[in-house]
Length: 274
Length: 266
Image 1 (tube, each protein chain N blue to C red):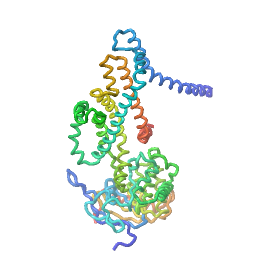
Image 2 (cartoon, rainbow over the protein chains, first blue to last red; image 1 turned 90 degrees about the vertical axis):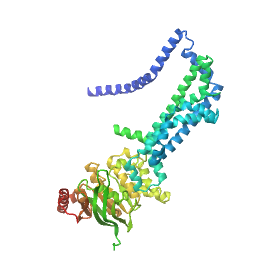
Image 3 (cartoon, each protein chain N blue to C red; image 1 turned 135 degrees about the vertical axis):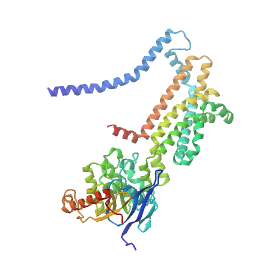
Image 4 (tube, rainbow over the protein chains, first blue to last red; image 1 turned 90 degrees about the horizontal axis):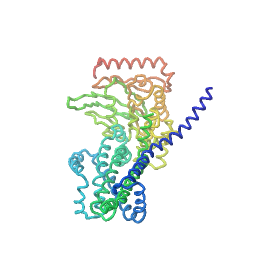
């Protein structure tokens, strides 16, 4: 009798696993699908021309973005985005580490940092246009001017919070300055740095679009603004869809990198939870 | 004139912490010497400044006055002749490095060939019985194993003296016995000099060849006791010896007197 129930329990456990996978798929895809259906139904019954159905937008997506526009608009945008993110990370981590390490530097720069951080980056676009012209550099500078702050401030905090016993260990073994930076300070700050990068990414994407809407002749932001001004509504929506996809891709890439870089951090948390 | 075997010489060491609410005298006047190859335990009532003393010896804290000499050279900062094993192993090992990486880190700036460095690291990890865990990360190991990693890191550094600050205070009793035997073994087979700070009276008598009993704060050395137990020690036999009981009772009485402040500074 016991054997019998055991077998049943096992079989239902196996079936339970399959069911859980299906369930989680249904959960993650169910709501988007439902929304699409609702959208499709309302759009067909609506006469508002600014509100096209999903099929129309998908059609526009295929026609607009798959082809020369990908090379002329999407790739340059992504290139500037990548450059802006890379520069933000390098500047944010390098400057943040220095400020975090040296007390006097922190006291010197803190009021200045607070001021610059408070300036909304889009207002810099006209200034940058005058200083740097309507160039890629201008757009990258605008991206950096916004995305660098969360990375910089989180790095400062992370570096400052280096554990005292870990520091004493480094002292007692007379570890050199570079080794200390490479093997203690930066890894110890890396969870905070990654938090900053995650926040910086979304800021960078926003600023990429805005920098292109102001003064540009190519790029995703420029295209979307162009479609909107010319009443190409389905095309405009398809651009927004593409931006959403870029955002999702960015988050997914970050997720992969973060899991690699912070493997030890997540490992500790798992051990502590168990 | 110090004799040739003197490894560590401490003379009239005094440490005062300055604070807004007035100065706190943590260490009053400590003097002792330690010979090369000795295993000396320092035991005292809680709050007597054991950790302060140890940090002064290791060059991590500057004493207010007095002298610490290592091989006849005054200690003014951390020295390659000493390696410290801290009590908080979880905060002393770097979780982003593997066991091997942790042991190797202090050797990176020593001018060693790759092969010589690898040999030191492998040898140290073997010596603490962690060969199977070399590629693991510290947080994947138990507390006792983590403290073994810290010991391996210290001996791979090849110091002249191993300074241990209540290293086994945070592990369970069985693991603690194993780790005590590991320290005895490293001391007898490798001739490593060990300065072992503890608040555990039994541990100090079981491990040490000498026990320095500290007074309550402001601290001085209340007694310098030679432990005349056989060199070969084991957890059951040695602890059952009448002499062991006598010694631990004696140290216990000394600490009780220290706590009550019934002793007079020299």
